[in-house]
Length: 376
Image (cartoon, rainbow, N blue to C red; front, side):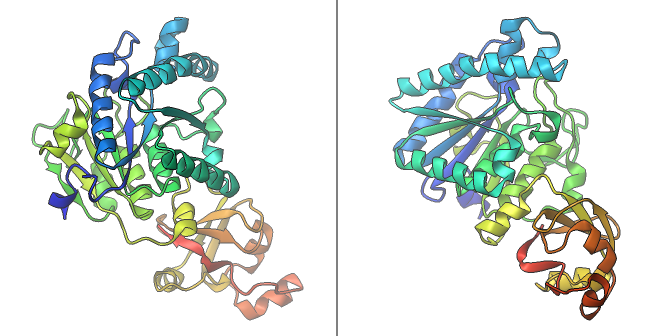
């Protein structure tokens, strides 16, 4: 299967998201690496000619804006500097993409989103509809986080996970992350000469997470391998494959398609659009800690009953999204809670038939219904 998917050929991958990081797009002096970017645009044009739809998730606005404004630390010295740099650099970034795509006869569209735009269900659906219409119009959307208004509390923080969520919203078949390394290694290849690249990852477990390294080699970006593996979890949970390949070569997509190295995380069985959105969320309102019996029941597809709850954390209202966590700290599911946090605390560990006596009513017998829950 990996051989067939290598390069994400248009015949097998109808819709592709391509993410480019700041260090690949902007040089240390704060200038766009135009010659390299032109080779990537040629890759995109060739894929479109072959029938593949392409969405671009592009970093670089803060790095570009910081140079133009003369800001220290690449514009990341403070939130205010980052917001000002993003507002300035985004114009230059969008002009660059529009110009290079136009050279190939391709129309570009800009989409700026925040974390809330994809965590709020209604706005997520709006973004999905916009992407779908742009694809129908044969346009290449260029997406970036709206860093000019994002704050620490309402931002992705890296474009790896943004790319995965955009892939989910666009119902993409695959996501490719262009990186400064050519895949996932057993250890940091910059620090360990014996590190081995893993070509195919069928399941993201604790062993795979342990291989990720949080470092960002360039100092220009905001993500590391941890963010890429987290992006893979989101993408594969939504039924899309995700690849990590090197962007440090010209025409990186063509190079990969012709046999260049990379790592592919294989898509998990789809669990439906709404449950995929739940599983891929990056923010929740609280945590419900469950015992071993409840963990087994959830694994069999059952709803979460109050009797299996060991502890409730956070302040949430009915309908908020909460994490369902084992007693040893593993997040195993995410869902829409049927009771607010105060009521959940009162009925935790109690049988469903006891709810009416505790709360004075029993509007629902479960704490999180299986129809509103996604395993992660």
